[in-house]
Length: 469
Image (tube, one colour):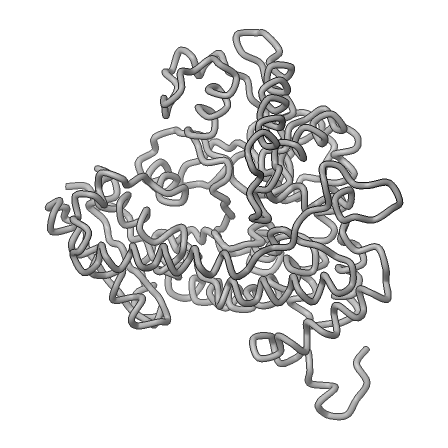
């Protein structure tokens, strides 16, 4: 029997990630002969996920080896893949980022990737990610470190810049292959509704080019069997935009009126925003600045209380699987592989599948630098991802992409250096901030409000009575 990979998951109780990775490790013929090591700093959360894993293993008869620990050092040795999926008090801090920023005229509907929310989430999480990279370097030097934590491009840039000797790339589940291609084929009327994957002969005719920075990615080209389908895609978006008003629009910030925002952005840039629930937050147009009323409307603030309720409800369902209230058969019947372990399966098994991965550009987008950290379709194996050529980023989107990358790069340097001058520069470079004095107030208030979960170096000089630079 061929050995499967050892996969270590840091943040086993993840809102999105925990159960799908167990499903994939149990059901994949390539992964089920390996080892799954679950790590969570909360013993109760860890035990809940281990119960699910044990139940699934017993029901399936899979030879998967299970390990669990609250201390990653106990299970990291010999890992082939280390997946990062943790976040400390996610909804609480995102709501705090949002509320303080809103005081100074900056609105965020997601608050985890761009704007002050994205910057401060990186300040909170990145130091731990770099410490984990040190542990990987010592205990599993051949392992691939896969980041699944937002802002994923910031974390990926940090690993590229400050842990270059550790093999790494970053992920987002928004462009999960092959499901994303099937979704667009359904929207274009080519693939029947309810079909989850396109047959190979259909997929071969589909020329879909997506490129950009994570959460600000765009369909630049959409051809099927030699015909340009961008007009068809626009017609679909227009129909859905009208439907949003025919039904009562949701009050939730991220999904609210997304097709109306997408339609306006598509007409502006000539490209479709693939993650519009985030991308509408990346541009200043929907902040409410200016004199003329904003269409479709200024974006709505991230509703942290809703996210907390959703996470609590999802966790309740998780506990029911763990204690047997929910039959394990339902877990298998409703399960689907997650993005990270789909990729791990393909890498380990040399399956030759293509995935959207966040990594250095390496010439795929001709008018951006080779080290621009982009989300692109990649070939990959155990040597890592290799982006496929895309061509040039169109003007307009090129400038926005460069501005977002500059903000992310400055965020990394601020998080590593704990230098308030660089942090202010990151805030001032961010596309949502249009007042330097407001940026200074946001910075000061968020540093103070979140000081218990930030690097102590942000406050050392002040605590010694010295002025901060």
